[in-house]
Image (cartoon, rainbow, N blue to C red):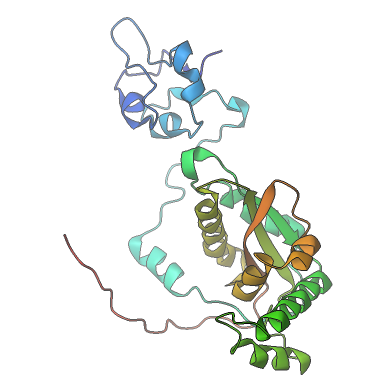
Length: 272
């Protein structure tokens, strides 16, 4: 079986697949041959699916899980600029959550969308840890505070900032995880030069998709700083050998509903 499967009855030999292939490995069709990938170039395919996705006739199928192909219903996935703008503008960092957990099936549904986030060379290096137990999130917050106590006695740039956070925590105010019931952790292969960016892109997809499921999110900056440096927290998260922590996000059912869009600074653009 070849790298791509082409239906001869549907293929118009338009050449789109050849043009859009980022690896430039698809030979163009002619009067006597359909488009195809020479055997010697098959190993260069990154399985991105551009050839299949951009084929206007629906004649081409990337030979990677072909039985899983799903067609896009007519008109599905189309958003007006206005609707998209309001959806993104009303997105808020949520720091107040209800006590009701997000079902695992819902989390998996969001992550199923997130797996389509772009990654360098379509490497798809990002994997996930979901701390679903609220007590587990509380433990992560406590370990983050332990890391902050070490900073307070050091020359770290945050040494003067963390004492207030520590006092708030000890007074019963969760300023670390904000009482979020769940924590999403992205982890990536060690040594990859691009996977850190891939993780942020994937988390941004989660951040954007989650509100459509009624989920509120907040980037977990304190946890992420601690997890990048503090071994007890790394052990608690259970990241396997050969992998490393990338970043984390708090999420849960939001306690409050968004009813307006706040102001932001004007766009600053330099044209060249």
